[in-house]
Amino acid sequence: MNFLKLIRYQNLLLLAFMQLIFRYGFLKLQSIPLALSHFQYGLLVLSTVLIAAAGYIINDILDQETDYDNRPENTIVGRLVSEKTAYNMYFVLNILGVGIGYYLANVIQRPSFAGLFIIISATLYMYATNLKQMLLLGNIIVALLLSLSVLIIGLFDLLPATGGDNIQVMGDIFTILIHYAIFTFIINLIREIVKDMEDVEGDYNQGMSTLPIAIGIDKTTKVVFALGIMATVLLLLYINVNLMNSKLYYAVVYTLLFIVAPMIFFIIKIWTAQTKKEFHLLSTVLKWIIFFGILSVLIITLNIKNNA
Image (cartoon, rainbow, N blue to C red; front, side, top):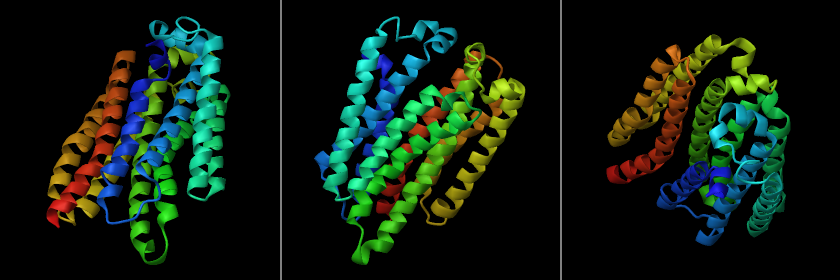
């Protein structure tokens, strides 16, 4: 159980769920060829999860003092798992994740794509050692890596099967993946900043340079408020252009109830939020928005099938 807590199994399950939904709730319901078999796609999901788990471990190893200040009851490395054991887990998970990625890159006959897994692993290490201490850069890096977990589906399952007469169709589907990657990036960027607000005391004690430390909690709430407004406006525009105009009314109702409404709740609450408890609640709300955002691709696909 300590190992599961160390690798943030809930977050990994959400990551795996996202990639499975995009494959079996979206891509497999289209009349298009896919490059990977079921087993190979399972390996792609596994590789992503293993590298992400390794990232959580190295972050905990190098962040022990900060974690003890912020959440002493949840500190794992050095308390429930030895640092040596954690390092061993980190190396094993990374080797397995990158090794599977190398195999898959050769399966789709694009061996250079193996470098993507190495870059992700190296970036997670650099984030844990240096990047997370730099103003906003760490937040952007984490959000980018999570959005990349959406794009990697297209790179390994769509791109190798693209050619001839299906270029236009595959391009349209890849564009949808890009839209979801942008959504994932924006919401995760906001969430990372909110988590920094939640952890401001411990981060300050460790000499880190997060946005709440640099400009203060009050100004950061206003920045997050503005980002929340921007994200909500973009969502409403997307709903109007892509869902309402296509008469996907079930999808419209779903997105309004389960994505837009929680975003409006978040915007209202963040304006006056001050306590660690309030920031934790808002971080959880954003995680649920991500979950329902992922699920929306299935709802939209089923709505299209129903209208056909």
